[in-house]
Image (tube, rainbow, N blue to C red; front, side):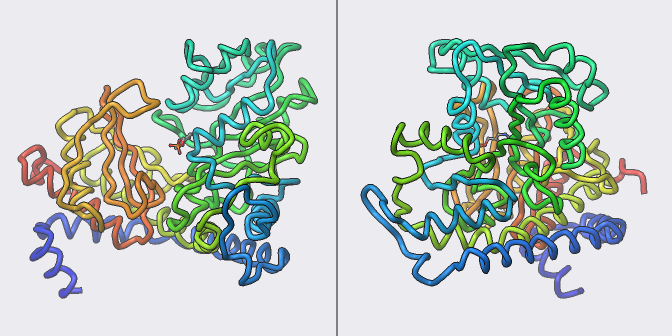
Length: 431
Ligand SMILES: *Cc1c(COP(=O)(O)O)cnc(C)c1O
């Protein structure tokens, strides 16, 4: 232990009391890690079995070019996703460039003019705002697709309002599992299932679509298993295991996946084209690693919650609460604290640790956003990362971490940064 302490002090400038705070946090969270180990073990078995069943073979790990006809590796990856997510079909491609793109495919693939999309978890994730109701940007609204939303009530879905908002045009309901840039809790698969049952009891043929970003492998069930018709996410988040270099996935009903595929490539072409370039091995190896990596990220998230709570900040969720995603929100209430915390995280990143992040106008976001990472894959947020819109109440959304040690180092270093700049004072903390 002493060797570790000496190392942290000598090379990362950590004070004894920061290290002690981390020891305390680590001790407090111990009982909560057991459950996570079990979930990860189950999910690992599920992934291996899916690979066995699909007959994954060495020759599937090679690449294809051009049109990508008969790319058996690509098709096998989709078979494996379909099986892991218990779906009728899957679309898993490097040509899906992000989570936003994957979700947009679902919306544009399925919705038609005069249809209505109803978000039942409040305003959707920031980057989806332009997709859904942007003006003159080829949004759903530009194509005459209507939109309405129901805010959460006491941080939970408002069943009464949802019932009253569903009408004959309501064709799709959007459920966001993760908190996004908000302070509400994430939804667990069981809560999503209950919500879907409620919606389908009102109107059987409503398509229930789940934005599953940051949710994959956090639980033993995924949204399709609790009744979702479509579910989408990013491969540089949980299911890519920190190895997939890009990509997104959509899983769900066969008919709907076909529609999404026509939107991704072109009508008539659908899933049959799309070269995997050189990423088949990385995508599939990433999926193999994903349960393990999500486990490390979750351990890190629980540590972060407890450490930052002990350091005097409001955190969501608390370390003892059940999680539906890998994100921890820390409320800083002050721009300077927030920015310097992000800079501290960056200092412990494996890549670009010498670079200091600045708030910038990111495409798709309406506020300036600061992002700290130092990741191997650009913008990857299954790797330890913090993003924060520069707006009140100055909340940092911390997620990812390929390994627990890195998360602990990052959080300790970030807090040390606040002490070194006299933005925080250890003496003010209750013992
Ligand atoms: C990250 C995220 C998205 C968008 O994914 P990108 O890959 O950043 O485009 C959408 N919804 C939620 C809840 C997310 O966390």
